[in-house]
Length: 131
Image 1 (cartoon, rainbow, N blue to C red):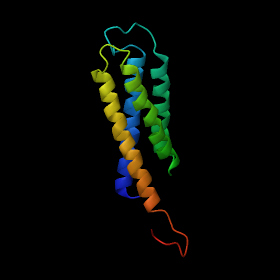
Image 2 (cartoon, rainbow, N blue to C red):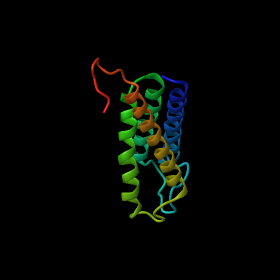
Image 3 (cartoon, helix red, strand yellow):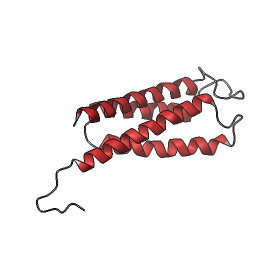
Image 4 (spheres, one colour):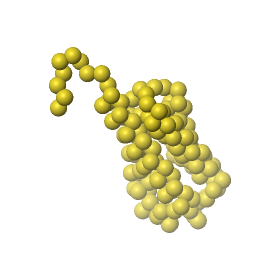
């Protein structure tokens, strides 16, 4: 893995860790996401916190494409669910959510970039044609 790939992977792990922390803060009610938010735990956000913390650890400890693919796949429902639930909230979009989504888009971009790098640098079988 090149120095650039290592830096991107570490940045992705740090981003996943930061998303986990933000999900803990919002999921435990330490910061109110909306004016109507009732005190108490928000289980979907805490589940997200655990998944992003696990992703951060996997990105650090495991080489290869597995954690990258998992990281990319995790972003899709996270981004889509935020937009789907927004219609039911007042305000529909808020600073905490938009900050988390921006980090998740950056994480998705990093995972996809690293997946593309590992694919292009994978050894080719003898006699394989470049398409």
